[in-house]
Amino acid sequence: MTMTDDNGTAAAHSKAGTPAGGNGPATWTPTGMPASPATIDPEIWPGVAQPPSGAKAAVAGKAAGLLFKGAAKRLPLRVEYPDGTVLGTGGPDAPVMTMVRPEAFEVRIGDNGLIGLGESFMAGDWEASDLAAVLEVFAASVDSLIPMPLQKLRTLYLPRTPRQERNAEQNTRSNISRHYDLSNELFANFLDTTMSYSSALFPSAAGPLDSVDFGVLAEAQQAKIDRLLDKAGVGQGTRLLEIGTGWGELALRAAARGATVYSVTLSIEQQALAQARIADAGYADKVTVALQDYRAVEGEYDAVVSVEMIEAVGYEYWPIYFQTIDRVLAPGGKVAIQAITMPHGRMLATRNAYTWVHKYIFPGGFLPSVRAIEGITQQHTTLRVRERMGMGDHYAATLRLWEERFLARSAEVDGLGFDAVFQRMWLFYLCYSRAGFQSGYLDVQQIVLDRREAQL
Image 1 (cartoon, rainbow, N blue to C red):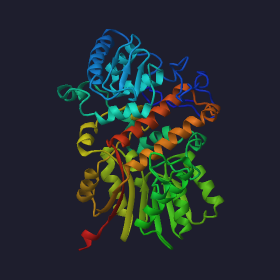
Image 2 (cartoon, rainbow, N blue to C red; image 1 turned 30 degrees about the horizontal axis):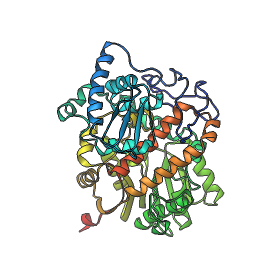
Image 3 (spheres, rainbow, N blue to C red; image 1 turned 45 degrees about the vertical axis):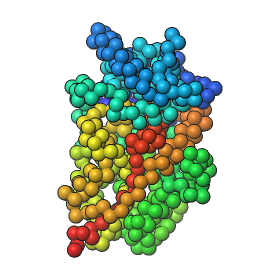
Image 4 (spheres, rainbow, N blue to C red; image 1 turned 30 degrees about the vertical axis):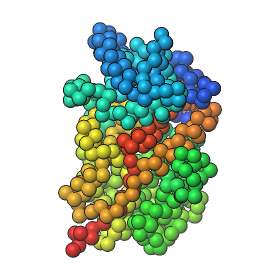
């Protein structure tokens, strides 16, 4: 089945065991990349099945094509066209972007900017020798791809966030379900045994991050969790609030330390599997997993931990997120969060943008900057940032392992009913994210907060 928002935009997925509109299973090229879909169901993928048409789209496509070609000539990659034209400054070892249907590509990006870039890959309008490497080139040059005068006009022509995707309480469960309720089996096919869906923290003994293998991922995920629990002072008798359950690994490890855990999630699928894992481990009396919005949490807790959940809160709700933590944190308590961050200037420039990631992956989400977290907590709470550690290179390694695992388990993903367009979408998402961390455009931080300053 597919999920569709109120204005008819498909949420681009199928449920386990249900073929996505009869498009058929994905096929895979010898290089391991998903091949272009032979047919695309327009009811499931209305933004992908056909490129925009009409006079306005044609004009926008011509303009976008000229801008893209002008930018590509300066970039360290190779853009190859069907007529033999090659653009870019990259040598023979540079990543290659191969245009299959350049006119469709240009019309899509002319109509929808970066949303069109992702949709054109989903449709097979272009291919890549190394998708993450191609996207890394674009991520590293994001501030110069479009001339500055045109960047200032972006708000006049780029789409805005649909009202029903804002993370008000009445919308949040729907937004979360469109990603996390896809299928537990889908996530199990590329995550490790801990079912951790956030950056790992690899020990130095694992070797260089660009060559760590999947066999060490579970240990690295547990190391990430243990560091957060240590920083929050979680131990015997701790009353711990976890905002964002995931599939339960952090709650399990906290309970094993003797903590009592109250964990909140809005994902029905995650709640069910987390509860089953917790019961199987014998901690059902120590851990409560509630299907509840974080804003509705009551009580008092000695520690609050939240792993990569702030990204789903939404820009305008960050004060409420931290005010909720401040409200329930006991005197002397500590907070440890893990957050994906972006540079502050880019955050301000894009806070009202509606992107490919919003449309297809995380509706309602937005990444904070470290400066924003520090400013919001100082202005709206008694919490203060005490310590932070950046580990973006660890996220790049984590995403590479997920990408490799996803590609290796393509037959299993096919068997769950996820079609060729979905698989290209998911690969684009993983590679798009990895490119952000490899280029330095994104980072991930473990941040510790407490109230010491307020108590002086």
